[in-house]
Image (tube, rainbow, N blue to C red):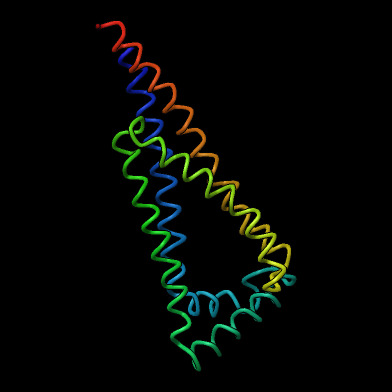
Length: 167
């Protein structure tokens, strides 16, 4: 029984580390948005269909940063929020059973990306393809969280059985 419990803990840790790393990386990449856009706006970096959209966004960010640099502070907060949310997953990394609510919160957040993208995207004139890219973060993100949730429920069951057996 002990090896099963250890095996589940290892699986949970691996998936959570993957998820945390993804959140931190997506957060960190929001800080230098103008520099990143300048790089991918160069011809030949992205497909021709995407090139126009990237150039449009790059020029909007560049003009906005030149004239209203304080607006990028919102993107900085977005980056910060990703990092802070990633930190919340340290709880389940330490004790998944006690902190299963964090996994549930994460799955709800991943699911909530879809209506946000499809409701707000058209209002902000975001191309459907780009909204689908945004939705992919939720769809991909929910997979490791759901696996961790399932493994945590199994771990909880094992721990409960061990308590019942020893009492």
